[in-house]
Length: 251
Image (tube, rainbow, N blue to C red):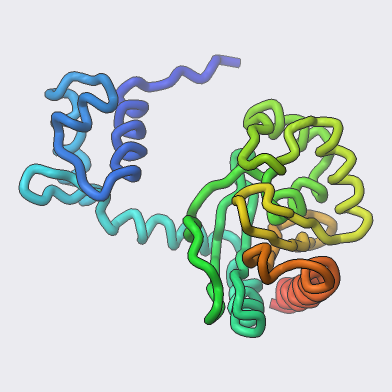
């Protein structure tokens, strides 16, 4: 079998797009400096992307174009769990006033397919399409607990277990033990492990034995504690996931 050989031009294009995603808008020279590439190379790539309507040129500065929204919507719609869970995620946020979300796993990371914010929810730096480490969030741990051990090993090997806060689980043996507990009780907890000051509870979504994703409720530690954290939120996400799984069965 032949080895996969990276195509340098494609790698440069992807690096440019990734960097554009980190800026509202950026000029050619600044982008070339950031990527340590010749200005002419960056300019030619940008012009090709502009011709394809993937970036927008605004007076010499470039930003991502809305064509990515079209592609992102198609990618999201590929996941049947999105339509099955979207209504429940919205309902959880409305009922509790907090944040609810739907996450799936892709390439060893979690991807937010949908988020909803309740009336009293705090604003956090999180958005639909964002990719996060699985081990640092209740959503991610709920998914990991439903994956085969070999797949979990692959993800840990590829992505590592970086500390996101002082509370993040960074030891492999500790994570494995926690995943076993999550698999038994059907609910995962995040006690300020991904973001300081935020607690969350999540439950996995199963379909025919496979884990398709997870649904969560999250809120500030000042409001999410005691029975609300350990009893109320787990019951609510478990109930929501039961509805999602029924939606999947009869859709």
